[in-house]
Amino acid sequence: MTKLMNLINDDQGATALEYGLIAALIAAAIGASALALGEQVVATFEYIRTQMLSATAGTAG
Image 1 (spheres, rainbow, N blue to C red):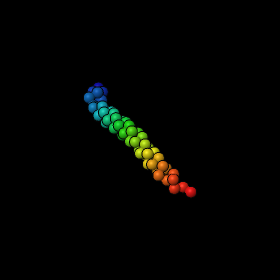
Image 2: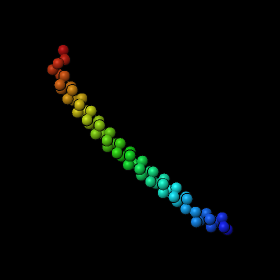
Image 3: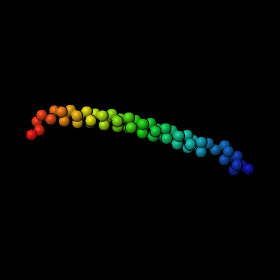
Image 4: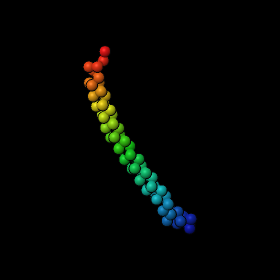
């Protein structure tokens, strides 16, 4: 009976679950940030590519 009461009163499992949820939320935030930043980086490189192509269009030959 004391083992059962100790198991019921033990909060280590709840703490581990809370830490797991926090880690999952942090991972989701990092993933969303990387996705948003990735799109911005792609747009920047596309702009640079377009500018370089237009700058070198008259010099080919």
